[in-house]
Length: 302
Image (cartoon, rainbow, N blue to C red):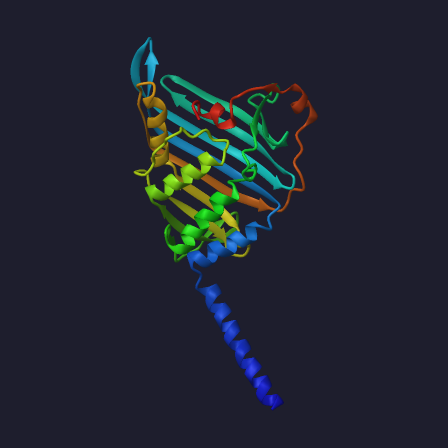
């Protein structure tokens, strides 16, 4: 009887291990994203390299006359963020060209929880600082990323198939590590829901009220580290959303604008390597209050 019981246990163990092997060798977008979401809950800090490239056209006024000209913006930022207490440090450069003017500006920013909300300390010369305060709207703090309502909602839509996701057959190498690549298509209706969630949550991005992006479906590429089961890279085609925002903002001024290309890429280079992020006392003491947000400084009108 004992031998028979042992044989049954061995058989069950073989089946379980085989099933686990099939799950590992034959991953699906749902399995990978679900596992990634669970692992993200254990993350205490993140390091990332974030870049944005924008090419398009915009109408500007020269001597009172509307003139259509090209607009280019490129941003390269190094981002560090911790969760307890929530804080972030951003440093890099923002460049751009519009009409006959070009600029290449350094940028440094600290963000932390403060006075019942989040405070952003920003500088373009490391000497003069401004402080922008956003009061807590009752939603989860988004200092280190989008709030949980948005993230969980997107994951649920991917798992249910409402958002289409396709896993590439071949893996890629990111930061010297093997990573899966998942292509995700987001319809205009889903994008509209995302915009409304961001708007209602009091996010730092001042999205134009009444913005309609139902005709602005988009796509993104999500890369997941194979061993860590954590995000490796996220690339988003923001051109459809950029067009909708430009039309909403400039239309009020009887102007026009269009985004030919607008891509945002975040490469996650490290996890759980930072204990805390402190805002230097000289930054806090010298900062001048401003109503302008970080994105409002980078892209006027947002």
